[in-house]
Length: 379
Image 1: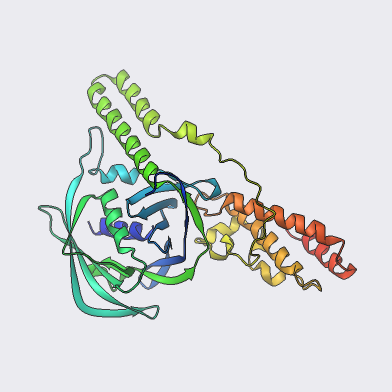
Image 2: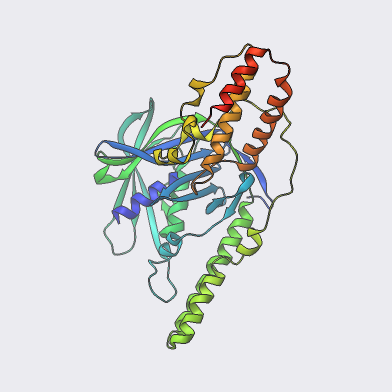
């Protein structure tokens, strides 16, 4: 139960309209998991000004994404062009009653009780109050999670925690709550000072996604219903070894009934790459979540800004920086856990190539030589 609580807490940090809409994020929150005084990246959360959240984490190196708003929390996947799609993972079936073998899993009901304590602490210079979140599941012993929450924060990611628990543990009911605010730290109560998740940075964000949450929730429910029907069929036919094989195939077939259509779907192309952008915009390589990813990138990508030449042309360096940085970002797309907006990155590369070609003949001989040598010697 302790591990389950910690997983739910991680996922909750880890992250409707009737049609797809653009959701712009104002803040990027980074959390770390600390064990034996050793920190490691845990999750990244993007928050809008209207409390819409996209959370990215991983479990056993498998990337996991969650989207949360007033409608609830949905497991999603990050597609091209910054679009989200509904998704399923094995944890969802586990959460439907600890499913193993054949038979339809059943969700349990839980009660979540919130108790405010008299103690406080300060994290990143932000004061927060301690709360105990008790998860009660019938005859089991109560399990308690300790949280430190900034109740004055406009970022209300406490609501995400309940959404994640509903996804994986079962339908829950909040009691004595009404609590809002940003979670700065959390852990099972007995481990709060030893093993915990803590907020390590808050940054401004210009990231955005396109998403139709209502449709995604409907699609996800249809997929779950189809899987449950297939499992029921397996129960009915399992007496026959041959028919059991057929039933297993039927589960695979309905696991993602929309996979075929989505596989060949692509948004209409809109030519936007010539539009002015901010050359000092964020690059994915400036915030790589796992050091192992560097092995898939050219060597020059690491601290590449230090090796950029100085030019007489004042604008050339910032355009060259953006071009090289965006190219490095594209190498990150080899990883399944990447968060690179592929179309946007390609647009930026095309725009900078166009700029470098157009400006080349206007540069003096010294700048032309520096530019040529720099690009030629990139590994």
